[in-house]
Image 1: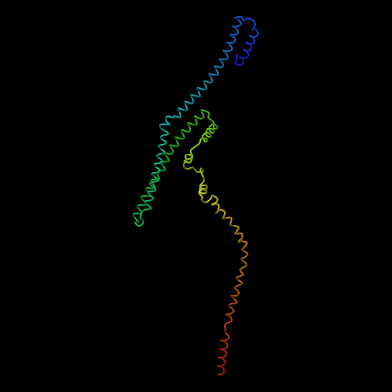
Image 2: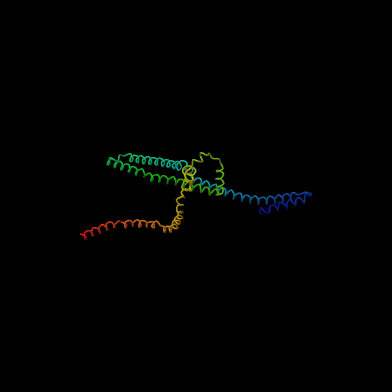
Length: 285
């Protein structure tokens, strides 16, 4: 008998007892009713036991998998080795970067302060300090290796947390809701500003900062682009080009030709008349 048939059986027994309510029930009737109830209840509880067993088994498997994932996460290893090691690597990066920067600046100052009058000493100073600068620039290789170790640690932690999240069945919607709840929490204004330098494409644009500080607005760099719009004056010059036909001043050069006429009006006549008089006197003689 299935669990779905149990209500019908019980209802039938109740109806039978109601019919014989005024009659005296025999021990046989009571025993038969009890037997039916026990049989039906045994089937019902057996089905319940099976369902409970399945639920308990599923819950046990779930807890076992969660324990495995937490053990694989190795929180003790993260606490005692990986996370502290990553912190030490970052501290070493900061220290090496600071040391290299100081070395480069000191070498540059030594070159700038050298006396160029003493050629040999100046040349030796420049060579020595340039070599120190080259050696200081090698910090990039070591810091790159240290950063790779830190990235590996973060990648390991991220993978373990992602697997644990998948096991617990946490959805993206739940994560978004939790993030919104954290944003609603009041944050100290000073701490909100201490976010450090932003990455490329993030933060406030430098042009916006300049405009806020009273510098040149962002639209000012577009002024050179507006310069090509000046072809319109070029069109005006093309239209004005026909005006070049009006070099009437060349006509004014004619007075210069007229002015040349006085040269033609030079008094040759006096010299001619005097020569004629001399010739007549010579012939008369």
